[in-house]
Length: 318
Image 1: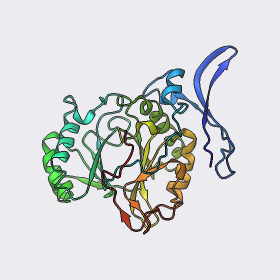
Image 2: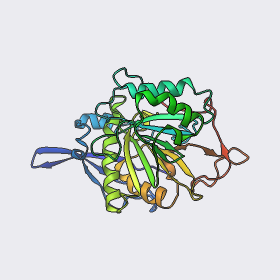
Image 3: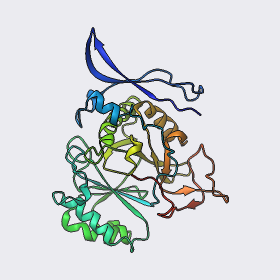
Image 4: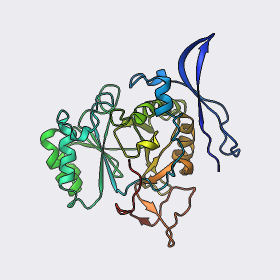
């Protein structure tokens, strides 16, 4: 199967170039993969996060030469639980926000999880996601998957107890208020200070996702969040979808090389129908294999026997 590639262009009036646009077109694809109409996306939609030039888009955006050059499947390191700490916004995150002396809460939580990792029976991954004005979350809220809970208002002084009670012993109710989450959650890497490719691609994808979700009247069912580094910058745009599979189990599926034109398919195929978009799929929170080590039921979300990768088996999280 040949993959379609985006073609960059400029809008203009006369000989005066205007804002850069992206025009996506399909190339020699089967009818099931062809794009029915071009998408024009103004970069001004993402100006809340960042601005960038045409040259930057060609080097770091959806037109960069490395797009589609790598095999995506198998590029997710093994993990069984994902913790998202809601904290400030991508514009102000330093490159290593989990280790920044100026950002004490992420640093304390990251350090506490690392210190207890050999005691925590479930392999846990920590990522930062956006909080504050314009979101439903405040600094210190913690989203936990696949448990589908939100712990409210973690503070510096409560980090050790949170890790002890919740992540180590599974006793959420002893560490403060929490809410049960419902619906599907999409996290898009927009951590521009860590890697410019994510800083260019991520905000555009966030805008497009929100636009398509609004058009489908699904704002109370699908939630989109910019997040910090998740691994594999070269695969930007990167995103993770946490949604129920056909058995109602919450699974985290990772996608790479995602462009704005892929957004409708991800919403309609992955979230609505429960089918993997294979050409963009990087892996998932847990992997499914048959007796010969091959992935079963490739066009459906895996929901049977689980094989957990070892760290030595994981690939490509650059």
